[in-house]
Length: 236
Length: 226
Image (tube, rainbow over all chains, first blue to last red; front, side, top):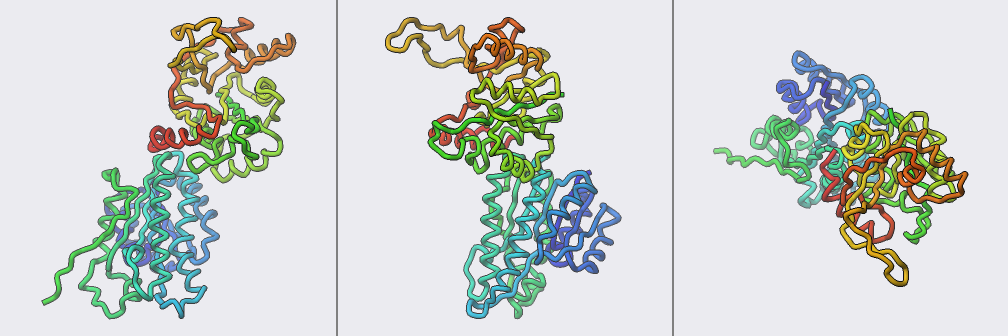
């Protein structure tokens, strides 16, 4: 059985990826981690005719439970072949109003939870090879006043992905990093509340790129920070 | 099934470091883990015996947990000499065949281990051709040895446990010292030891410069291979 673990499936890019993963039957079982159980169960219903799913209740702001959950997934499914770190958090603030709690929560969800998921998953994946994909952001590459916690956390994701590409290639594990630009998600609404979401890239378009990367067809794009941007024509 | 015995009793004198070389980081992880991770992925090996100083056992146990090594591990105390260490390791072996390896040779591929295991002969060693001239003599040259007749012995090696134990017991009885085990078996004419072709990348990390060379071997040979 081919097994994929993912976060962020409740909405936005993660939800679109979960549905496309099921439609394309890239994996037999998708283990979904998150805290919004209502949203996760709803997405599972859409996936279940095509693949097996399981939902694992965890608040990624408290990632300490991750080792235990990954062990349980491995016990239940027998292997872990893919990990998708898609969940993201932001509370954009200028420096002088950025609290330590803001930084901690942003780093817990965007950096520490992915780090723990990768470490625990690799304990099993290193014997079989596999794929890991981290969703960063163009915000991690270009400075933007007021986005300190989010931008710096995404820069960490880009760097972590590049380091791990080198470190894990010995095991036949490919590490991908994608940095979507402006994409119509709830998180984007927090960063740019005045933007019309219909004028920018849609989650389904990012999901298509991600599903291509983690399919067996892709073999050459690991180790790069892959920017996903769509040229949008102005209205009118 | 087969037991892997890993010699890890070295004290790192030539590396001039308080931490023995086999625990220093090479390409980002402790040198000994390079071999142990690959051995752990081989189903025919169902037991690993690590011969080390007692004081390193707890750190090694932690490493085995961190790297999720699932093959059962046993420890054997290192002896005063390599020969004593091998003998000590053999006391903990529960299979009829042993794969003898040393932690200071981190670049043995899974396929290299499998080549030894799959050899139908019970006593087998890797041997690599000698690409330089070897002479006999210390102050003046007494003789030039013929390269065509020589091989550079490389670990890992596979042995029948009872044969190797007998060789060690004979060496102890005769108070003879050996720096390597295949030669011990052949000296006492206990069995033939087959030589299979070794590899240039299977270097032994001995001096500080070997770490630099080792990083290149890791990058060019090991990475990207399972």
